[in-house]
Amino acid sequence: MSLRVRASVAVACVAAVAGGLLSGCQNTTAQPVASPSNAGPVSGLAAKVPEKIRADGLLTVGIDPNFPPMEYLDRGQAIGADLDLMRAIADRLGLEAQFIEDAYALLVPGVAAGRFETAISALAVDDNDLQNATMLTYYRSGSQLAVRPPAKKRFGPRNLCGRKITVLDGSIQYSQLVERSANCVENKKDPIRILSFQSQAPATQAVLDGKAYGTLADSPVIESAVRESNGQLVTNGKPFDVSPFGIAIAAERKQFAELMQDALKSLMEDGTYQQILDDWGITEGAITDPRILTRKNIPEPTPLYSTPATTTPSP
Image 1 (cartoon, helix red, strand yellow):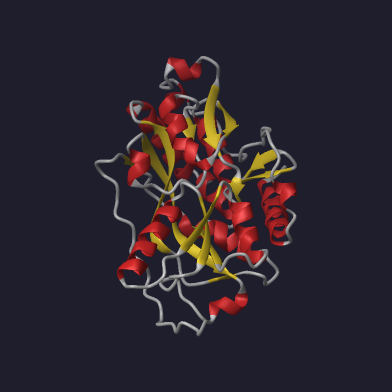
Image 2: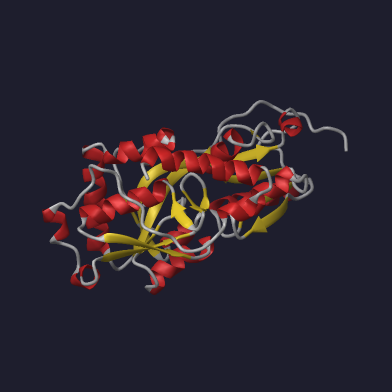
């Protein structure tokens, strides 16, 4: 299946979520999908792969396939931009990516515990993750709020006190809501009513069903859901706390992290990286200089964009 066709399947999956057909996007087990045509092994890189990883020819990758278009399930097969990127990186190293599904909150701990060698799933880099793993940056994204259309005229992303907001358990957005809720209380306002979910699809569905005011997630996930919701969802404000997405690698595997960094740079240099982003329609978050981040050099997120003042409606 071509990258372009896979992108169109992502549209169908998000549309199914918007229409309440969640089961069609939540099966199990991933099957291999072809990597971009101009990806392939680089002998100088492949020769440096540690013997323990090279022995079986596989690069094990933990994923939570619930974030279209980055990763999600279609008819039991995991597809998405993150998976195409990991296949291309593995190719450069003379390996085949093998994807292992797990809960989002368990991906980085899974890398630290050795359940898989790497993990990717729109992992926004934060202090908690870097306690247990090294992160190789490959994309930039912010948090964004999606709401039903009538709500857009009444609230901005700064003014969520007292509202029900859905969020992925263990995500950076969950931490953001906790922090903002505490700020509400300090200012003698009602706390944000945080509804956490194990995957993004039911978090989005709760908003569509009128059970929550909005959902907070990574901007490409929100933009994809809004684009395919047939007008049932709109974004509320610009992305905020913009920070890198990272590929998690065990902290003690510094040399392997550097090797993956070199593989990613080679994909950027020959256009494979850009091709993947183009085919999935997520070019806005492209980067040109992938970095290896540890708890000693985590970057500060871009602060919340200024938003117009909003008026709280009467209860």
